[in-house]
Image (tube, rainbow, N blue to C red; front, top):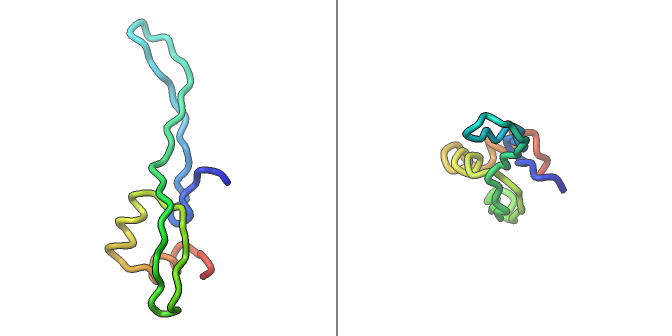
Length: 75
């Protein structure tokens, strides 16, 4: 499975390493992904998601049900 956040859809970004002499070589910046088990109290079960640290903060702020509903994940 690709390194993509299941909630926010964050993917890797491609850019350049720039040396002191301004030579440019390609590089990749990967998202900060965490495999997290989240409990759904309405259904009485847990689900495992691969989410970014930013998405985890959003879940803590807004709540699990609202974030999953907005992102379109079927539970």
